Length: 90
Image (tube, rainbow, N blue to C red; front, side, top):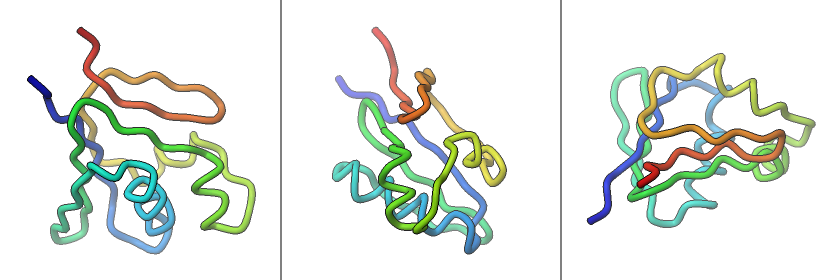
């Protein structure tokens, strides 16, 4: 049985590239738009890749920057310099 993880960001120009990268890298992820917030749900795990966000931004990007507009998340975090992963470990 799969269990969803999620991440929610403020809806603004700064998060557009992050959200686009997440959705492209996680084809099973589902986007939900709310006033001032975008929530992304995914079954089992969700990965944010630094390189994917950098490609969309056209500049270097530190994964720590995602915390500036982060509202909430669920799942266990596994973080490196290149990837931020949410998953439920069994």
